[in-house]
Length: 89
Image (cartoon, rainbow, N blue to C red; front, side, top):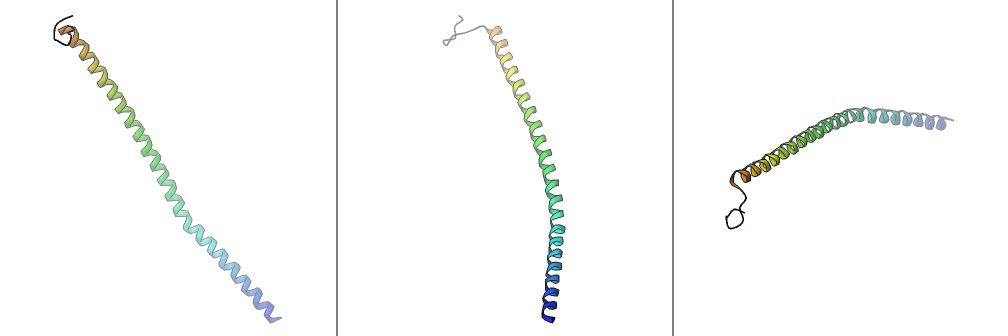
């Protein structure tokens, strides 16, 4: 009878150890989850900032291209159209 009581007590202790280990793992996982969420929000904000930068650069390039085209057309109107030899058409 005493052997059975000792085995039962050992099993109870194992269950307590497992419960403590699970609680400890959960306690350790909580800061990692918070850090992961914070990092995810930060990456989302960085992505949005990069998208905005890309939109602005694309608009700047479109404006540059329009200005160059307009300048070329103005120059052509001022100086006339010339062929390869430099004479007017």
